[in-house]
Length: 496
Image (cartoon, rainbow, N blue to C red; front, side, top):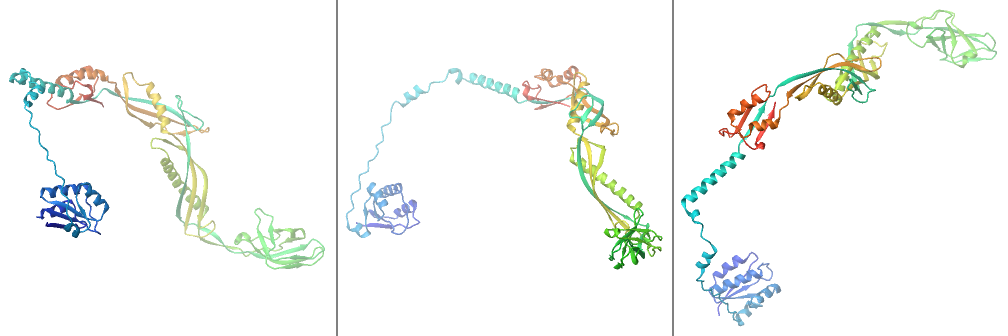
C-alpha cells in the first residue's frame, strides 16, 4: 500500500507538520523522527496530528527510536516502526474505531419553562404613562443629588482689622536662663576668628643704623693669677637699658694685683646709640666679672645712622587702626551668618578676645616704601534668639490684645534705642512690637447665613451681620446656579 513518508526537521512544529499532511494523497502517512535533530512534539500535538490524518482518510505511523515518543505514540494507538523499510514491509494494525457523538433530540417544553422562569412585567411598567412618570421621577432625583453635591462656593471675608503696638524694655544678660515678663531675656555668646591684610604707602623718614662704634676697654686684674680674656667677652654700661660691647681679640692679663691690659671693643648694635662718653663702661658679664674690672678711659665713637624712607610708629598705629576696622566689619558679618535671620545681634557687645597674629612687613626699623600688616583676631559677641523674642513679645501682645480680635500674621520688631551694655554685662534697649489684628468670625454663623441661600441676598446679610471692612467676595461654581450649596463641605471660607 502506498505510503507518504514525511521526514521531520529541527525547525518543524505542529503547524508545519500539519501543512505537510495536506500534500499527502496516500492511505498511509509515515513520520520519520530524525535521529540527531531535536523536534519538540508533545503528546497533545501527536493526538492532533492523528485526528488530522483521520480527517484526510489516512492512517498515521511513526519511525523513531526515542523512548518518550514511542511511549506517547503507543498510548494513542499510533503504530511505531524501527525503520521506513520495516514500515513498508510489515502490516499496520487497524485503527481503533472512532465513536461519533449523536446529538440529543431538542426539548419541546422550552417555551413553557421560559414562561415559568421569566414572569411578565406589571402593566403599569409596560404602559407609556407609567414609563414617562418613572423617567421624570428619575430625572428629578438626579437633579436633586446634583444640586446637593455639585455646586461649590469660595467665600472670602474681610473682617475689621486694627494694628496692635507695644514697647517692651529689654535687659539681655548671660546670667538669665529663661524669658521673664519683666523684660529679662537670655543673651547667648558666640565667637569668630577673622583675618585681614592691608598695605600703606610710606613717606616718612627713619634713622637706620649705618656703622658700629669702636673703642678701647681697659681691663684690670683683681687677683694674683693670670687671666685670659677671650674674644667676644661682653662688657656694658650701667645704664638702663645698657649699651653692650664685645671684645674683638683674645688678650692675656698678667698675674698680679692692678695689672692692666687694653683690648679693642665694638658695639653689639649698629648706630649712634653705641657712641658713649669716657668712664661709661663698668660691667663685665659672665664669671669673668669676678676676676677683672673694666673701664673706657676715652669716649667710644664711630657709630652712625642714616636717614631713609621707612615706617614710623605713627604709621604702624594708623595701619593697625585701619585693619582693625576691617576686621570688626568682617567679624560682624560672620557673626550674623552664624545666627538665624530673626535673631538679634547685640553689636554693642562685639569685642576682641585675642590677637592671634600681628606681623608687619618690613619689620620695625627696616626701610621700605610700603608697609603691610597681617592680623588675625578672635572676636566675641552676644545675641538674643528669635524664639526668646517671640516668647516675650507674644506674651506682651496677648495680654493687651482687645477682646474679640485674633492675630493676623507674624509680629514686626523694631529697636527704638541703641543697645547699651552696663558694667555688669547687661545690655539694655527698647523694642517696639507691632502686629495686625482681625476681628474673630464665627464660622457656624457664616454657614447658617450662606447655606442654601440665593447669591444676591447673601452679600447684604453678611455685611449686616458681620463687622467687615470690605464687601465679601463670593465665587460660585457653576456660575449660573442660583443657590449656594446646602452641604457645608462644599463651602470653602478664607479670612483676609
